[in-house]
Amino acid sequence: MFDPTAYENIKVVIEGDIYDRDLSGEIIVIDRNDWINAAKLSRKYEISFTKTGYQPDLLSAMMTIEAGLENLSAELLESVKAKQLAGCKVNISFSLHHKNEMVVFKEVHRWLEEIWGRDRAIVQTALLDPLGDKPTIKSHVQVSFNRLIYEEQIDDLSEMVDYMIASLEKIKKIIE
Image (cartoon, rainbow, N blue to C red; front, top):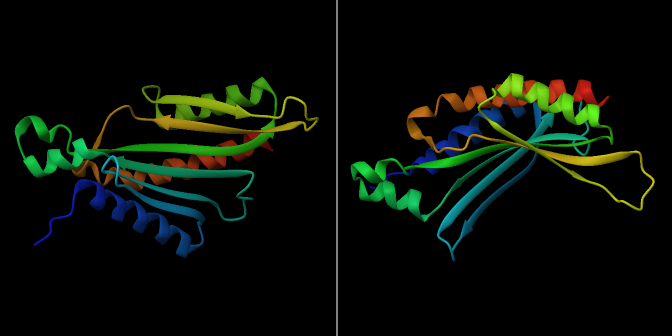
């Protein structure tokens, strides 16, 4: 019988939790992608959402999980050393439109550090038209864990979705 990988089990838990919240009206799923890269033998899953009542083009959150060949082979080989790679990468990101003001970037960073913890890598990038005259820009904020997430930590994923929603609420207050 087929035994699902850690990637597949984590994906099912994330997808189920987020869609349950969508059905309850707490959030709205706005996009989902599920890729298999045959050249690199890797998988990647992304699911994006925003809070109900928020404009998705102004503020959204995305959870990404990835597993490469080394992660899958580690599960199949079942050696002690290989078990360290038998998981997947999980990243959280936020897309937002806001005024091009340094105070906004600093406040977003401060609140995300408070919500996610100081041991997370939080990186912000901004996209703007240097010749345009719009007072707002689009920025992307990535929260990285810099380690693999294992199947044993699957219960933590629901809490991660809670943190994503709390982050959306804080960011909304900052960019308004």
